[in-house]
Length: 222
Image (cartoon, rainbow, N blue to C red):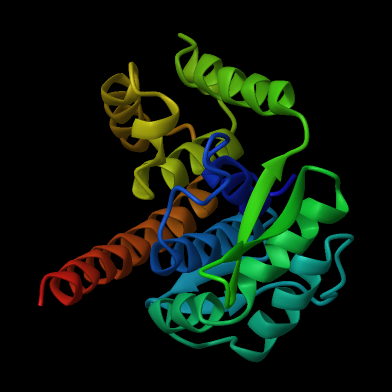
């Protein structure tokens, strides 16, 4: 799975069959995950807060990445914040859901709701596979030799943290995970070029998601 699939997969609550993250938060986080995926593949860089698309061929095996590669090619030179917003406001969540269904990670079922509506439920196909993934992520994060820790693992851990999923997935270890991630971001385990792109993406995502959470809270209390 790519970062966007992993994030959405781990966002599903196995008990309620619902998402553990609000749609507003998830759409920006998934947009950031897509950009992180391209950054890890050396396809994008950021200069003066603007996206630079570095790939000539926009074709990927992943339909999700192929679609957004074409979009990013068109948005070359646009501000990073604007790119994340535009990607997040597309049908990104649905596209990633379709990918998880296609790869047999989840099954989507519709249930009647208030007689007139239907509510979607997301069923994990292999709960043990998901648990193994969570245990592997924690094990990788807490290994002593941080130099062997992959950029992909750190990127996924950050995405879970900014969506506050670390508290739900690792209720007994989330504080230790937060301290570990803070330590890792100060280290030199990222390649410098990838590190800069991911740092820029993370900064923009933090601002966007903080604004989204504050706006959502204000709306709900008014």
